Length: 273
Image 1 (tube, rainbow, N blue to C red):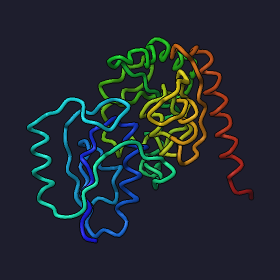
Image 2 (image 1 turned 45 degrees about the vertical axis):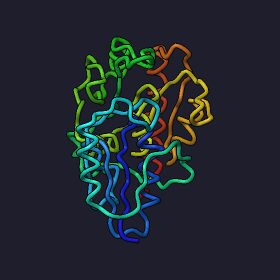
Image 3 (image 1 turned 120 degrees about the horizontal axis):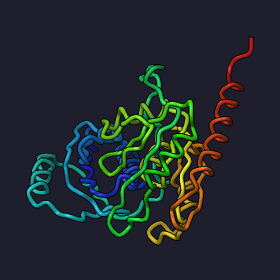
């Protein structure tokens, strides 16, 4: 086999993490050249790619299909990909994580002690019909205040609210974000791409969902978030809140418990003199 041409991936980030990049990794085995087309800046997910073709197309939420076609961008990407001859794989539905290969993302050694955060939070803005899948920024700020004495940053892209009391870490290059997550102690977020990314970076995460059944994956959302969509088995706590509005005090309590547990595990792993 000579060349594998994968993509373009145009779907949601969470689905790219759990239902695509790991499948590309499996399919890439045995090929001398791997050409991957995915959103600009996502190179960090495709270490097997010998050629990366970035694009700026928007995808459908919770899916792999193109939502808002951009004819010029589509034509440009297809023209680039047509220069390569080989086997083509396109996103074509949900791929069970059990059939994929996942690797740990991020490298904490690339983050100095002065650059590390105790907690990273993600408070995303309303998106389309799922405007309730958010986190009120005032509640997020209350959580930050409850974690007094800790260094906290907020992550995401322009879909994330600023959080009072936390450092602005939005729109970082994905490879840098992965490093910062890997070096952090905890990520707090609604069930979303950043929560799933935290799991792939090996960093514990505290998140919440309405626990609804997702027909595309045939699982309840809370079950998949801590189970099949957490393929590395990272420590996590998934709360079920029908209104997607967890009590900030409850979040602080769970966060403190998870941080204490992580410190105890780190202490236990230290060599004894």
